[in-house]
Image 1 (cartoon, chains in turn cyan, red):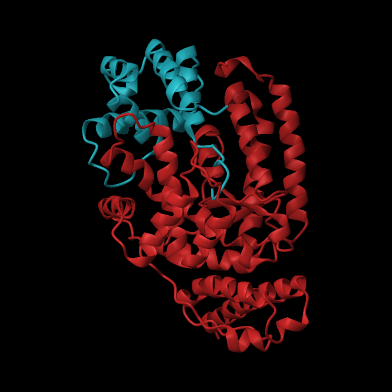
Image 2: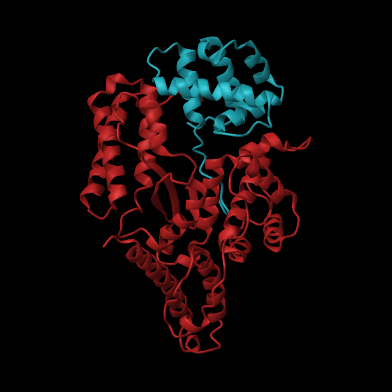
Length: 108
Length: 354
């Protein structure tokens, strides 16, 4: 935007929605949303390890998460506890959500 | 505020969806939509039908997000009817976009702002809906959208819509993930705020993108409409003018080089000027449209038109000296509009099958 703040519908709310549903133990999460969530976390972990590997399709949420992980804060420790993004537990989902909410805006 | 504590009543979702569906149907019935936008609106309406017929298939939070996206879709169709959409501008933006999106076809939906607000919505609404409304059959639906907003009062003022090239830059940035990737490859310095630097880089990129097409005209707009002082979301206007001028003058600049490095790694086209400035004096002086040649001249017409308008507003030479400022402004914007429309018509004619 030339002069005024951008409209911040950045898609992160879908990521947060997915985490919320896992954290609550909902069983009706749409499959594409689950796939998106897994893709974001998987790519974020890869980018956090290898920040120069920016070739190919990149998910904006993954880059944001990778930057948070590289900061070495709470999210970095949470991600280390995560065995596979496919099998994220409700407790870990809530931990990630809590951290993401405080560092990257989850627009409601 | 936690995600699940607000607005979870499905009844509100269904009431809203009925209201929105009626609005989309009105749009389709108006027959003022292009074929592509008509199809897009019908798809949106069918998805709402599906959700209203099967609300129990979806979690209340999913429904809430879906409704929010439908409100957005509605907003960004408000300025999209053929009666309202600034066709010439859309034509020019599409030409600029082609190099960056390849064969992927986009439809542009537009919202009218009632203030001096140009912006670009950084999400594709339908793409997001596909992730949450998963029981709908999307077979055969392959539409990618760009959602823009610009001041209603400028709808027939192409020269005042030059900032939309900057907004298109934000779209291209998102498509190629340039700014985001730069945060990984060119980390911030100690003490800098990540979000602020990210915002600033995004603005620099959009400025540079606009400069590729409309050259110094985007600097002129920056000087007049830029926020001036540095903020969390925008660099200072002086910084932006400096970076853009360095780019246009071929002066080495860290920010420009950073973006081109990232774009090379991402296999994206590079930042370089793509305009040539036509001389409008002879034709516009006779109050005739200019015969625009190639795409570089099409984009350059915005810059040349802006320069011509500034000069004509001095009203020190015929025919402008005999008119009021309002007429000068209206006629020159009209000449730019007609020059672009003529070019579009010639192109359609040349491409038409016998």
